[in-house]
Length: 197
Image (spheres, rainbow, N blue to C red):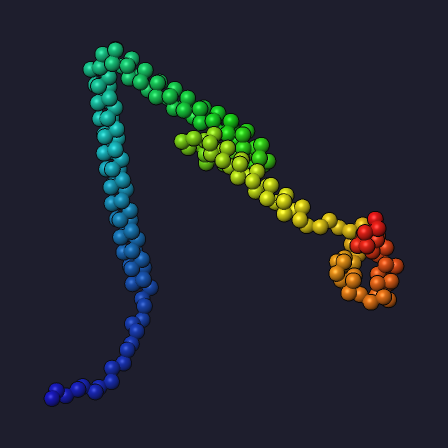
């Protein structure tokens, strides 16, 4: 087997010489300056290439315009104007349709912002009027069902809200003294239960 050297090695840090530190900083600064100069040169080269490409594109456009006849130029301008007009007309039609649908929806929704949102969602649907009619019918059916449920809820009794409410069977099950006390405390309800009102 190989022998292992067991001598102690001590780490010593060299003393820093101020002149060495200045030289290291000068080398770092010189390196950064060189890199900065390279980057600036590359940027200038890319800018020059971009300028050249832009001027070539402009000259090609001028050459194309020169080759086109006046009729072709007029036709191109008319096409661009027609496209702009058609786009504006489509936008106005959309806004008008949404406003009309929103007005129809306001009748049963009641909130303008919600009606506008629903009208936006419905825009472009195959049959918007049928959708609004179906929504209105569903809304009215729900409203009728709620009213029918509301009618089933008994109204508050006459007087305070602490009034006792009992049935005729409960009254019949009471003893004489309880019945007399109930009649004294709640005469209107007692008379109603007995059929005297």
